[in-house]
Image (cartoon, rainbow, N blue to C red; front, side, top):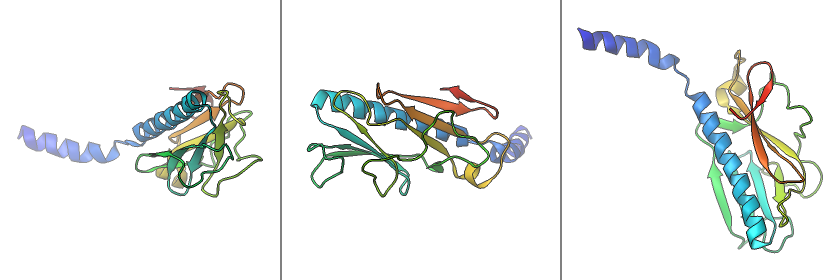
Length: 174
């Protein structure tokens, strides 16, 4: 009898549990780590490193730009970090952008797959950029508090930090 009650309770509760928040947190940490590794490699190897946010394939590509031309050429080493299942680059329309955010790739060499930032050998970035991560469900549905996070890369220091949308404001990494 106890097993039947536990089984029925689990059948009712489990479909309502949303794992989306954990997926977005995992994705934001992976993106943040990819940016930090790209910055470290640019400084230690003394050549520029490209970070391409591949919105088509939902992955981050870190390319060691050996000839410092701002493009991923054949033969240049690359590391790919795939986003978790159901997580995409983007921001639901109901969520405002981060204050003072630059949401577009900006000027310079653009990658057809999505926004790109260059981590310079000095440790700084070529520009400031904000990237948003959310779930397919949050992009499709208008929920009260969608699962959405943002990663900001500062130009001067090349450091990244992440923010969480709590329904009213953007707050630093939680």
